[in-house]
Image (cartoon, rainbow, N blue to C red; front, side, top):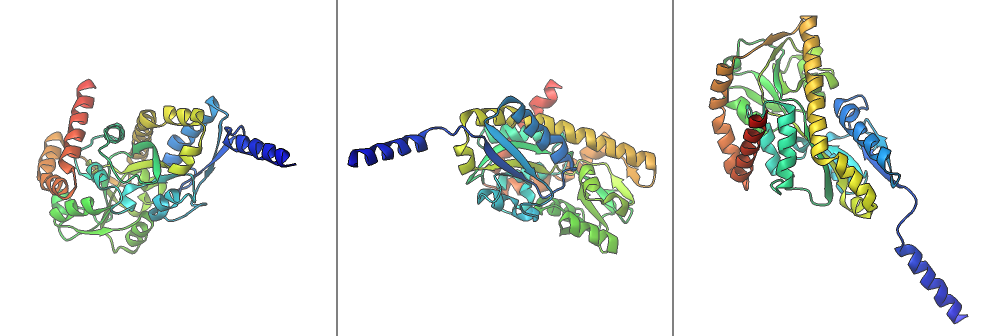
Amino acid sequence: MKQFKMALAAAALALSAAPATAQDLVKIGTFVPEQSVGVARVIKPWMEAVVAETDAVTLQGFWGGTLGKSPFKQFELVQNGVMDVSWVLPSYTAGQFPEMGVFELPFLFRTAEEASVVGWKLHEQGLLTGFDGVHVLGFFAAEPNALFMKTKVDGLGGLENMKIRAVGGIHASWLESLGAASETLSSAEMNEALNRRTLDGAVQGWTGMRTFKSLPLVDQAHAIPAGAIPFLLLMNQSKWDALPAEAQEKMMMHGGLAMAEMGGGAYTDIGEEIRAGVVEEGRIEIVEYSDDEIAKWAEMAQPVHQAWIEATPNGQAVYDAAVAALAEMRGAS
């Protein structure tokens, strides 16, 4: 009998150590709806590409806040394993990703592709921190923000004493350098304030304005590259470590640089489509700026860049690496 029990124990140990043959379920949550650009044009295509090449994992989406509605809690939820994968906006997680502020610097990035690819390259170089307890599946960014106004102004010089929504501290610093009073608000809070006319304008991307149904609330758009909003697709580290090697390989084959390129292209295309629709409708006035005017305002924004560099650990190295990567991309185009 004793030998029989020992044999059963040995068999149980061998079974527990053997690799799982059943599919691993990965729960992917977002606080935005399935129709949003990031889900429909980036995350879902990534999921489809992965499952088309491996049956070692099952990916299931939970959209619109099913696993957690607050945009400010997404990193915490994936870090704690409430969801296996989440779409995280670094600007909503204050202090967690200090180097991510480089993407929000006004006039640095011209396109979503630039911000997305540079973001992944900085991660590969180990220059981005804050990923305790998570694995980075992908990095992508929206098209550069524009300035949308409820109260029309002739140009950036007319923002003095205006109340403008900022996504985070860097946008706030830039707006304040122009004499505006910045207010850090979520998209929902921004809409309410615009509707009540307690806000004169907002820094936001074209896609964000459509996703959050904000375009009917503004009457003017200033076409300037007012920083890009970076996005992270993060997986709980313990969940990642438990996945079969084949699943990990396919996830990163279609994540990483591939996701950066796909995401940047998707946001550029959708942003141009939305802007063309606004032009055709003719209700919102679009204020264009010449290259010389952009260069002038970019030069005036340099103190904001320098302040971020000085306030950020390793800020100079991150900034220099971003500028070098941008020069390489622009030289190759």
